[in-house]
Image 1 (cartoon, rainbow, N blue to C red):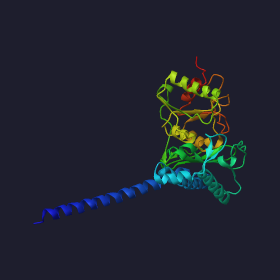
Image 2: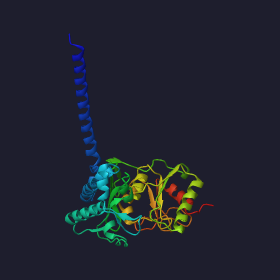
Image 3: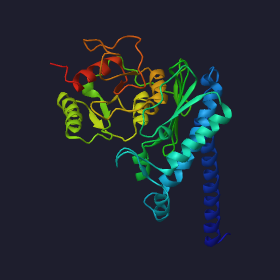
Image 4: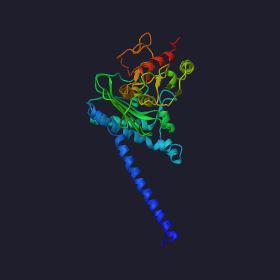
Length: 345
């Protein structure tokens, strides 16, 4: 009859084998999920921009991989080395800067595009610098943000991403956004839907969404003057006084828009003062939001809203606009805009 020691040894061996098998199953399952999450969905693979989309995914994943080492090591002993190697360079002010990885990512994207689509134009955040972005022409044009949420990235905060958009006929038609820390890949092609990790997304299925029940997002950006701060804080005050579920400021405009497209946020806005965004913040995410049945429009002016504050049907958002509001429904965009701008009596 086996001794108690033998029984214990057998139990340990059996448990170890079970753990090993379980670990193997977990690894295989994870690999299958990863394989799906980073594949171009079959529906999008049928589009006329399938080749461009496949390339965008490859470039975004590679750029995201370049960010992982710093994100994973920030705050550790090893992170002291990666932080010292960030090579931060200031642009317009201390709050607006780029890292060496921003520059490396954009160079890698530019080189790949030159190789694959030499006749296409490219507008990149870092190559533009503090100047005005080149105007969009009828030429096929890529608009690239090599790292959106650079402040988050430098600090090791996970809400940061790579954004690659493609325009044809002077309008965005393709969007690819990759968040390396959360391993989420957002894809969309005009007229063919929006996806996150291979699954179709939509801002909401609710026909009516009230500001009172909404999560509202905004970014204060780089504006620092007293007048600008008063205007931005005043808008937030009006939202809070009206009532909302809560507010958020996440530090990545591109992800803000992707989160509206996937229903994690209900509305996001910018451009109350000097904190408006740029084409590389909008391009890819605009396609994703439109394809997720969200409403995206200029917050200020009358290019997308009439004098009564109603959205102008079939009007298109200009990615060079100085302001923006995006919401999961048209009605919520209209209601929130009136509150933000103080148009409600």
